[in-house]
Image (cartoon, rainbow over all chains, first blue to last red; front, side):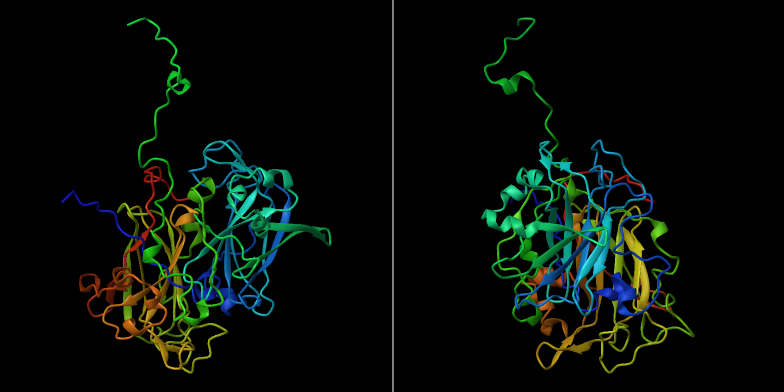
Length: 208
Length: 262
């Protein structure tokens, strides 16, 4: 017998269930309990960068929006720097921009929104430029293990065309499922997205 | 030997770089999906329309995955880990008083320090304080059902609450959830993000739960069951259950001395 490898095993995932709001967004469950709450607004008045709203839905295999889904996003600041000690890139850190937010879908429409800034591009380990993107994590009733995907920006065509992750997506026609569409509404920049869990336009999900 | 070695014909040999230690690149161990429920698990009917059908695209960890949000004590309030008191209006909630404690570890066995753990549950009668829960068991006026804690430098966390009750749900006509507490854990990178559920030793509903039995690996299922921990109970006050949570292993020791953010 060789020496045993004593690694532990990751704890199994379980669905967040229909009442995920109680723990993670109690105001949406219908009550007020914590002094400080996390939210879908990532920016403070001091945050650098272009203010944007991310707005979208998660669609099930019948074409219906999930009305009990919870999304979290994780992103770099406008200088392309994540607020975490493992990011040693040169962009300036903003202490009061955490770069993370969580939002629940509207119980009627299924729309999820985030108020944030457009992130800067980053570099991967080999130094290749990566297009600006927002990392997305999705949990809900019926989702047994959180789904990881990304949102890229429709007005970054050149950067998207060179992005090493987008270029891994085959067939290439599926790359469009990761791109949020820019528009302006009442003077505000909105990026719209649709995350399809199934069907011919199923969104690309990652094993990260 | 000559003072200056002749240039090699292999250009890589002219500018040797130190190679990274085997566990030093900061990425996470590849996720072993065999310990997790599959996305499509028809016995849990809600998964049928909500499960992706295409293969996941595997990508190497970049800075987007090995980083994640940092939380600190400034994010929490003083009663956040006390579900017996954090929503009490005119007394303590009804139910068996329990302490839940354990460590958040990664697959290398190291404690995950200063990480946010959030938890939520039904009350002792199996009813959630949620606008969408219509089960006939009553809402407890003194129980909110959620809390959170930061692990300490060794990965340890604890909270107190009342033991949640089982409750019926629409899957088969006679499906009941075993008593459980939902857990959300961050870790140090976004690729470690995990939501799971803790169950209680000895609950006869465990082997017949359509959600729990989506896990194909018996040992992985057993690891979601918290044992009674009499050594940690408070005599004449509360029983205790022990629940350790393991996140993906990290190929790094960078963060062992990381201080809390904020």
